[in-house]
Image (cartoon, rainbow over the protein chains, first blue to last red):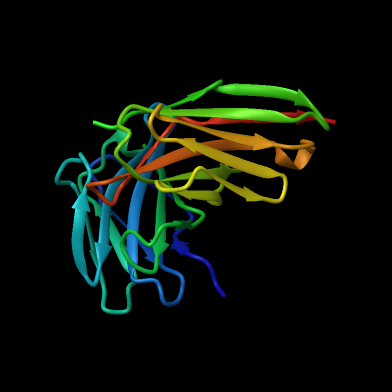
Length: 113
Length: 112
């Protein structure tokens, strides 16, 4: 059974650009959540989607957005990139919200220059 | 606001030693607690999940305990091996929200 797949794995952008990251959950999993990991702040919750609806959002500016498609795949977008957006962005999936165990992908490492 | 603390931030032990990693949280109204492992530059691997009604979970050489009333969890690793070297993260899910709140992790080095 394939795990959570995130693409791209690495990317470099410049300030002011925008970026879109993709996450394909484990087959049969319908809940997808996103986290940002930085050395200073650690892992912070961005948002969670279930059945194409955002169920919860963390304390991030509106430049961070996301969506989920009918096949449960999810994308997150960051607009007007800032240097501080450099981070590892991790996606996690579970069969449904509150299912218990979360399964994480390898992450997308974003560097903003 | 839930806060999760992990002590120590780093730990170095000789191979074969038994060790305990600590995790504390400020709000005892949790839904579950999960321990993860993260290797450098990689994603998170789930190790153990403890529901709020449980006291402990075991998997192989790993044992995690939960004391909700005191806001503490421990991860016990028996007979440590160099392959156990990684950062171990504790995360709690609140009773009223879906999101996980993570600690900053304990970086474990097992010396051969």
